[in-house]
Image: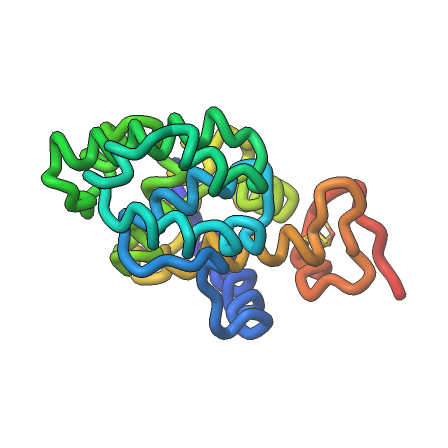
Length: 217
Ligand code: SF4
């Protein structure tokens, strides 16, 4: 993909405005180390970060390392993560992930995408969240919000997460990557909402080619 200087300028304007709107932004998930963020991210599927934050202190108090969580009694873990929903699948996922991490990486979360995605149950999105958030490394995690916002703003043509990630990495210099996902996600949650985007109050409406937007006060 060849990016023109005009496309790059436009992309920079969009990110600059989002940076002004969300000057400081990081995941709302509570964690003390990369492994805890991995586990919390797995638990956050189909629920809110607040719900996850209510259960993880107890989870990590009772099983404070990958090895200990790997050896946990699943029923006891289920009782702790119950309120996050899909608690059986999530329990199995965090136990298997922790066992894999303990066995193959001595319990130390690798800090590169290639090895992170070899961990059981860890996809590109989760791996990128951990790289950007826990390690401060250049990565762009693409979820449904990032994909939708990028498409509506005409930054990408295709909503496929791998293609969105590649297109955003082409548009923005590496130093900007860690700050992109969380801002797009927050903007997708409070303004460029999936069903009814709040176009009249949108700070990007003059830059947005989305055909269904409504403009005006
Ligand atoms: S104008 Fe509407 S569709 Fe475009 S980015 Fe803003 S909220 Fe989203």
